[in-house]
Length: 366
Figure 1 (spheres, helix red, strand yellow):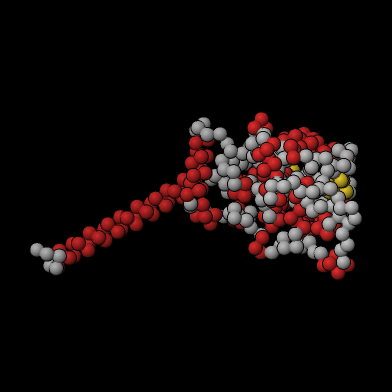
Figure 2 (cartoon, rainbow, N blue to C red):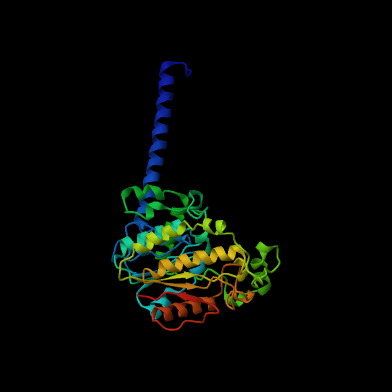
């Protein structure tokens, strides 16, 4: 008998159908099993609501892990911004300023991403007590609001920043989420520590005893061909034509203004222009420096009109010139973080903070 015989051909076809159905059923069962595994462990805290404790943070991708801290309702104060404020310790801020702080700053967060986090915080915490928002100099870029600059190569999950729904579960069916869920299970079993503290704080820089000034300088001056930038002021400021000055635009500040208006009247806050190495700023007196000064003036105005304060470290100073205060061109060391915490606590208490040589304070807290 051959396959050309009708009974044999029918049997072969039936066998293939059974195999195909078994394969599809096994695949569907595996998908459902993985969906259930992720849904039960819930590594991103989709099911977290006010009064519920956030899951231990088992991954360093802040964009995915931090929304659950906000949803938990455990924090009524927050730090927003980029890695230039991630070294601020929420415990120190809570002790020095009051409230229950979380550090929600995210590596390389764009203005658009920061505002998404701020809006989530405003929705979940109706009456925040305090906020600290790091305004890096790229907020002043003319193209800061362009669609191409809303996101970075790092994935951003908008579905974690809106109302939770069942459709969020299938979005987690990927190898990365399964891996994070497995880390969470390992943590539950006592086999793995959490990756980031439960208030969002992480010392992401190398241990201080390993600091190497030669290595730091290689990073600091990499964007200048390995040569230190001249941070001394120009003898005479450059002449900026009136037409050029009139053309200066800072579109992201309109986003900032709307976001600030979203805070309740009783919320106090400080805008911080964080310190980066002085070689990263335009040289004082140049047209670029004058443009940055104009942007700072607009930010200071936004703050003062709302009873907020601008704490500006973003200029060449004894804090930003010394190479030994930095790991690279934009990340300061832990002693500077402790100093900023103390400065902000002093501002919140209406006390003198640092001095004008290292920080310029505009406005007064309501």
